[in-house]
Image 1 (cartoon, rainbow, N blue to C red):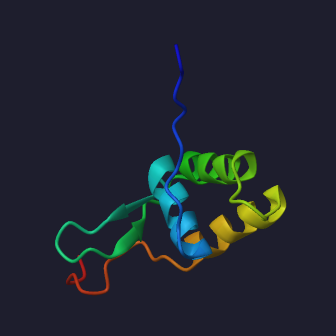
Image 2 (image 1 turned 30 degrees about the horizontal axis):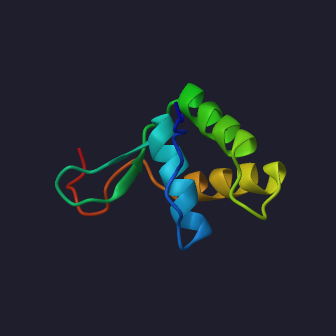
Length: 87
């Protein structure tokens, strides 16, 4: 009986791949009202995202480069939505 493996979809950009990994790990979430990505500020989720990137880097990218890309994208995402009023 054939088995299937779960594969991530292919992405057109490395940033898109990194956002997918961060979302899967729970390190970021989407603003329900405006759609902006927001950093959850969860250190465990951040490390989990880096671990995923190291274990399953996109084709042609080293584990270190994949982890660096995830960190770079995470650093570019704020913890608040720019369209939501300050709380």
